[in-house]
Length: 52
Image 1: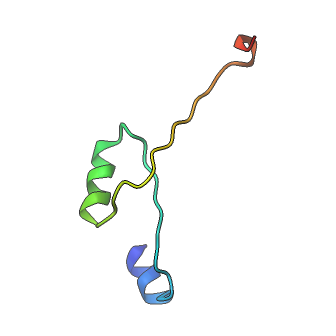
Image 2: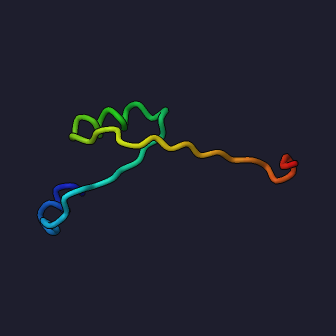
């Protein structure tokens, strides 16, 4: 996909990607491709019946 973007959309200068913090294999691949950690995000879920 990155090669496609580079070829077809040469005006693109920044690409964002996201991975779960526990997905070490994918984080490793992204780092080897040149991606660097920029922003860490946390997501939470809650069952509605647990809301007080």
